[in-house]
Length: 270
Image: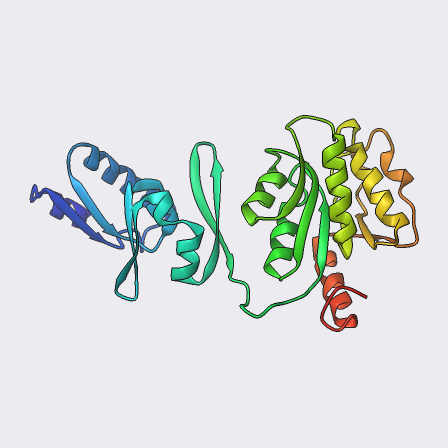
């Protein structure tokens, strides 16, 4: 703050900053950039070099992205930090999130350029019970689909950000015929169906009908052991089939998939 005061006391029209937040904890980072935002509103031009992309996205109107000595992007912050630009410049997969009026980025390792046929996994989830598994499976090279999800459900938002194929119904609506049919198609294409511990009720009861159809077809179905704890109608009790198995947590799903892939010689299909 003393160094910043020394710069400001000169009454220059432009303030140049090089990684000003690099040695600050989060509270002082925010205090610094709130001050810079106010100074900018008062007429000071602020130009800053940053590697913290979320700070850049939050506080700056326009961004210049440099890569190997050349301009990779220039313009409004969300355009300059698009997933396509960030993958090209940083070699990572970027995901854009919008929450409470803010936009922020999260990152995953870029997939190998070598094709990987690790199989297709269909997730039956909702209410945030599938978001983490969506990301983990996608990062590990599986082809992931999901459904039926209500639009704007947190799992639907995650799936949309990841570019997954999904069967989607209108917000706060029970599953209709079109979404149910699409869900059945996605399940028929899958090597494995995973049912999370999603709360069950009238609105998503047809998802269990679709899962039972997959079981009758012989598709492996893995069901969370905790499914049914939020199931006042006892809907989960009707799930039966030789290809049904229970899993304890997300880590067990990932470990079992890896073992399944190894047994199948590199792909999930057996």
